[in-house]
Length: 309
Image (cartoon, rainbow, N blue to C red; front, side, top):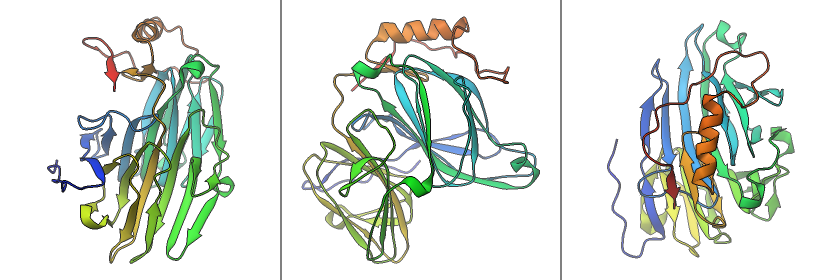
């Protein structure tokens, strides 16, 4: 893992997060940008993983067995490949690049994420991001829900050399049809070589995740792919692509309505609620995913849930 770059005293950045890398087997790597030591959450975003890029050999694929969530929404967004989603509501949905799978756990949901059998008949690529968005307190115990939004339904803002797809929330005066429950934004920005775009300061908490290329932020320096750049409040910033195309995800929103606790796959404003969810999963009181018998057992979780921030 590379070291964190030093920032100038007048930097517009609060922190630069160099994610931890985990090998899940078969050289399939996951990079975790949130939560991190430098930053626990950005707006309602409490978790950000980069999956891949990876090429599975014939017969291989992703196999995330059924597991539970409470108190959050999971957001899956792919740049290449596809994943078959199944959940305890009976949803069965293939997600492909540019689509949005938005699963609201509420009081509890179980889902699996796999490479479909037909896709395993040949080599297959996979590259994408998965986020967790903490739910407002008033929505934490709502009924679970799953919504799929196709790429053609998402608004796109274009300028010279710039394409910005609004995945969720509102940004660049455009609003996504994805039904988020928090005041947030999540945007896929692609910059052609030499192109620029200004990131406004309309939300209190903002970050940039560099997906591809080398992003130039002027006096703050240049940043390679795989880094999360957390902005200071109220600062406008200009994103510039150098000689290569750049792809970056803009994310954030307004501060949460109080701290959150996080343990394993559970997020809640109450540590007692998380303990209840752990016991419910041990005793298999969550509704199962239809047609699936496997599940991920509750791991040995030392200590109490971690409080963020």
